Image (tube, rainbow, N blue to C red; front, side, top):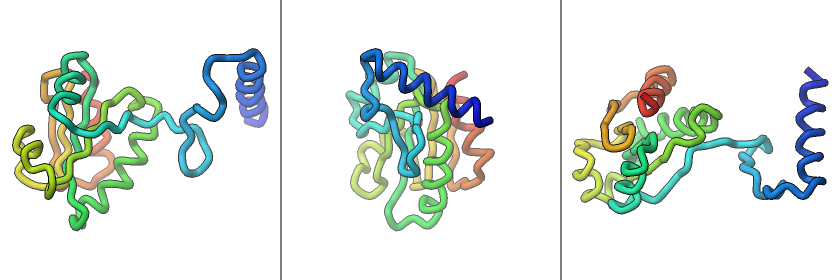
Length: 145
């Protein structure tokens, strides 16, 4: 295990020393100091959403509200899952249930704490009010199918 960590640090240092295009400081770091390969969190606009759909990307639309107790439980579960390398290319659109009603209606949501996944223009699934890690992970996987 120590050898694997050493090799990773060595390869990172070698890449930096060789003038690699990606700067050490521009790598995706998370709050705990590790590398984060999180999904791309983008502001929801009809244009940005349509562009991601047109490109055939896996997409997650997360509709939440600041006062929502279920959303408060979903957020850390979702954030942890989205830090996984398997979801690094997922386009994430967070929609505020209270201030973005037109976008809530545009995706056909009825309430906050709604998770909807798309692969391109095709909706692949949705969860409403679910906080179970395995169920949320299973939904995210559907965005790639």
